[in-house]
Image 1: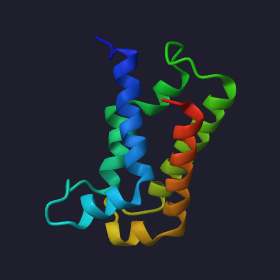
Image 2 (image 1 turned 90 degrees about the horizontal axis):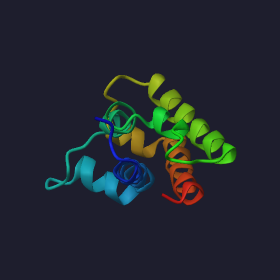
Image 3 (image 1 turned 60 degrees about the horizontal axis):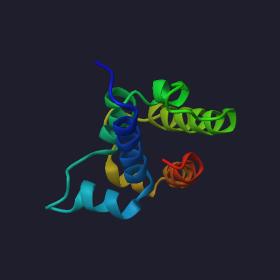
Length: 116
């Protein structure tokens, strides 16, 4: 049974918010009482759990061409980031990486553009 579009949007928005939020990442990746989520898990949650690439083009989601283009560019950037790193990169290295800062900025911009 397919996931309802409203729930799908909610789930995607939540993952993008966590990708965009450095404070969340510091808590989740380093605080003793954090979520213990890793950078790789964020990526897997977006693509494997929530099928982000399918989401982008789904007619019920209703993105226009510009929104689809921006979402696809973000998808490519995020996949490219992880493709150049070990399967489970060190969160300290990820957090200090300038490319990750750009990914966070792109996630924030995408959230604004998609208006989820």
